[in-house]
Amino acid sequence: MSELLSLTERLISKVSLTPKDSGCQDLLLEYLSPLGFQSQWVYDGEGDLRVTNLWTVRKSSHLKAKTLVFAGHTDVVPTGPVAKWDSDPFTPSYRNGFLYGRGASDMKSSLAAMVLATKEFYANFNEPFLNIAFLITSDEEGPATGGTVKVCNDLKNRGEKLDWCIVGEPTSVEQTGDMIKNGRRGTLSGKLVVKGVQGHIAYPQLAKNPIHLFAPAMAELVNTVWDRGNEYFQPTSWQISNIHAGAGAGNVIPGECVIDFNFRFSTESTVEHLQSRVHSILDHFSLEYDLKWTIGGMPFITPQGDLVKAVQGAIKEVCNIDTQLSTTGGTSDGRFISSICSQVIELGPPNATIHKINESVRVKDLEKLKEIYYQTIVNLNNLSKASLLHLT
Image (cartoon, helix red, strand yellow):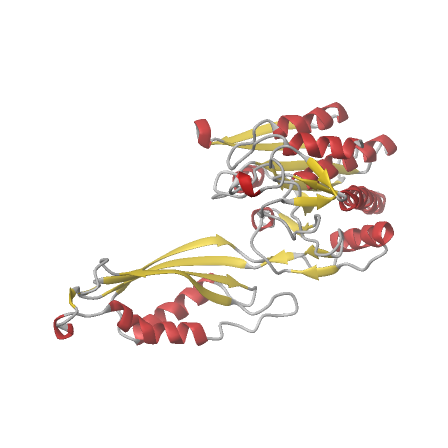
């Protein structure tokens, strides 16, 4: 068995359900600490709810060397009914060229590949021109309030400068490297309470049905074109996720209607503009309402530049394919890292089975992922070297 598969297996075997790390980060440090990485732990919460964050870095001897950060998470989502798995979700198993287990593709395989690519790099480059760091959290699949965002705030407060970041999210489709994320949409949620007057359903003149009152406004919200997107992003989307009203009886007009909705928005829209337009529509229909907003993350984009070119070049060399840039899908911790790092991309194995029963990763995809990470480090080391030589 390769060292890569062995490390991936050991990570999968740890039951690290959000927000538990269950020793995964200690395991990664077994490989990184002997390479000269210096570590800092950042915690949030107590007991079973404690979040474990690791920031570890090896500095180059060159004072103005650029910094590459590998970022990821050790926590995994719940397994669902274990009886529906073909094998125990926390006992790594192999079938038909695939490695099965919770976290196999999201994203313990990426963590293993990142660490071992880094180990290989330092074995081949004794005096690198690059700082390499790892930012690992156990709070990505959950609220994400005590995880990467907390570390980023600490780094920002002490003036740490990050140049490039690769997040190991599973971004590929058919084979490793065919798609990378060079940005993500923002997420803005609202909890809307439309107020009416409860009453007997036989006497509607004595009540005000909030569902009926909201219906015209909902139709306009559904049909509104919020923006048309741009070359990187699809148009902003508004969707209702939950709607609830009623006292549970068939003869009672409800007194209020509660609607949960969400925007996935592009860089063509701002939080303030979206909020203003929603309030304008609700006010247009003279609704009495309360509305609470939650910003889940801002959109970010990494255009063609040093990092994208370095990753594309690595993928071309290892896989002989041209990778597709994309900003589709959900949010990631890249939204927090982009506040302190101008170039952030996501690259990982195929995502077809993430969060599913029988989550898996193709073994050959995992091997290629490590090679891509390694060649990307080499490419960025060359860029950092060129930058340092230019300064001198």
